[in-house]
Each structure stands twice: as C-alpha cells, then as structure tokens.
Length: 291
Image 1: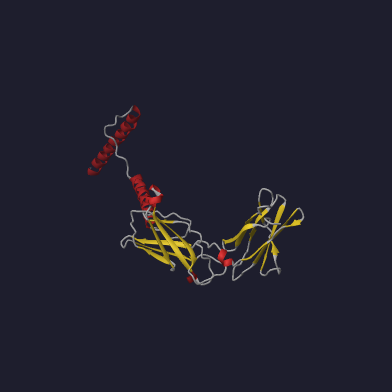
Image 2: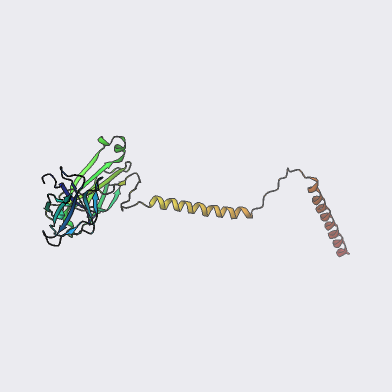
C-alpha cells in the first residue's frame, strides 16, 4: 500500500565499530505497523536481521544498533520491510558504502609544547582510529586555536586561528606567555583514500599558556614550578629540624631580676653554707702543710 514504506533511512558508523541506522515510519502507517531491518553482503544472500531495535512510543521499530562493524571495502545491502495487521507493506532497500557513513573519531594524543623566547608553540597529534585505514597520509585536519580570555568575554568576537593541514603537526607562531589558549582538531578525507568526506569529531580542547594546562587529552606538562616548590619545601623542613636540635642544647639564661621566693631562698642559703665550709677546710689543710 502506498505510503507504508519507511522514509529518511540513514546510517552512521561511530567510535570505529558501532553503527546506528534510523528511519521514519511511513506517512500512512498505523500504530500496528511493524518494520524489520535486514542487511548483508549481497541481496537475498546471507542477510541478517537486526538484533537491537530502536522503538518509538507505539513500539514500532524506527532504527537499529549494530556492534563490531568492520568497514574495509564493504558495500552491503540494506532491506527494511514489515507488515500491518497481517498485510504486507512496501519495502525499502539500498546499498551503502560503509566508509562514506563513518564519523571519524577525534585525532589522538594532542600535544602542545611552547617556547616563550621564540613566541612559538609546536602542536602535534596522531591520526584518528579506524578499522580500515592504514595510510596515515589519508587524512587532513582542521586546527582551531582560540584565545580563552576573549572567548570568556564574548564568544562571538573571540579571536581564533583556523588552519587546514595534511601534516600531523602545526607550528603556532603568535604565542604570548601572558595569555591562555585552547586548541582542538578534527579530521576528514585528504581526497584520495576510502575515508568519509565529512568532518569527524573534535578532539577535547587542550589549554596552554599562563602555565595553565588542563585537559583529558595527553600533552606536555611543565614540571619546573612543581619541582621548585617541592625543593623549597624540603629545604624548609631540613632547616627547621636543624634549628630545633640546636636550640635544644643551649641553656636558657637566668633572669637576674627575678625575685627569689621563700622556696628559692632555702637552696640558695644551703649552697652558700656549703661553699663557706669548703673554703675553711681548704685553708686548714694549707696551714697544716706549711707546718
């Protein structure tokens, strides 16, 4: 019956080996209409039905999720048919080149290393992951470097540097150590490989400048401030321990102005008598020796 076939059929491969296919129900499809997706390498040969359907509020199949999809040079056949109250409906079929529907992953391991004296930053990265591309020259990249301070004030007027390159590195020559920047990169087909011509996903922004480096991506960290702080702390602790030991061996001076209490007078008087007795004994011994 006219209007029962699906419309807007589309598939996308993402994260290397996952694929989602979606469609809209036919314009004359009723709530009891149900659709089924089959796909395989050739029409009517080795086709497999979807095992993980996406459903709408009426329970009708409107998509399918696939795992462990390998692109290589596949050009598989897709078929969506169904039924309504036991009656057949119009089917939909299409061949799709899988590499054309791949959403490339972000470039990997974005790294930034800046030199203040030359006002330059070296930025390099690794190609996105795929299941079929082995030639690293198959990609070209879009690089966006943004001044973070300008972006926080007014994102629409923030100063940006945008470059397209087929290399896996870039030299940024407008670096100022007093400013903070962020860089993000995405990839697409360089024009001569079996790679999607659509731009892939952006990498996680990497921030650099003003010694602020915060990102989930892998990049170079400046360790000098951290090492200096640790060394300073170690020296302070060593000096503190030394002075503590030294001060413990120095006797405290007696306060000459402190008044003696009755308890203090008793030992003072006793010591004085002992001293006088000692002197008298010494004198007597000296007289005996002289005789």
